[in-house]
Length: 173
Image (cartoon, rainbow, N blue to C red; front, side, top):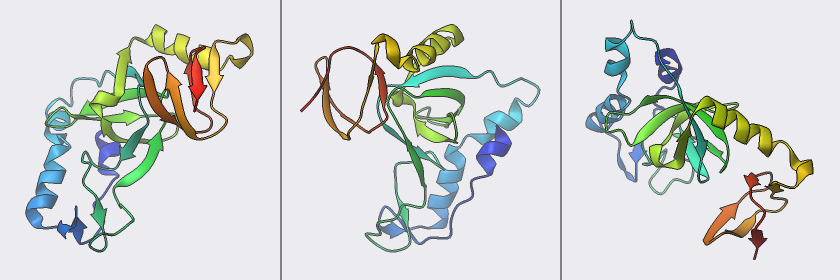
């Protein structure tokens, strides 16, 4: 896990949330990864926790929502890796110093996401959910075929094409 986290290096960009990206910012960002906890417990095996994402969420190379850009008001955030969809399974491998972020392995990507985006479950529950989400033929799964706002129960949620949900009452509006 330590090697996976350390694969991400800080790009040499100048602006962190539209302010000069200084040494103190860099140090704080590196410290937030909480690598000392991994180094301290090297004799202890990492025990992954299992989870399902409860909302669409950004997967980032560092545990922060602040944007790192090449210019003030820059459009490209160099810390943004990808976006994971509601219902995706993740393995939680590590937590940030403040506990607000977790380092996860998704199906095809690893990185940091907000801990609040994860609903935790045990391995058997994770397997049951992922198996059900692939069984479209038996009517328990709604597959989004067009990006847009949908109502799920009482909640209004933006869903992307390809999202699979365990529900019968998804309504697009």
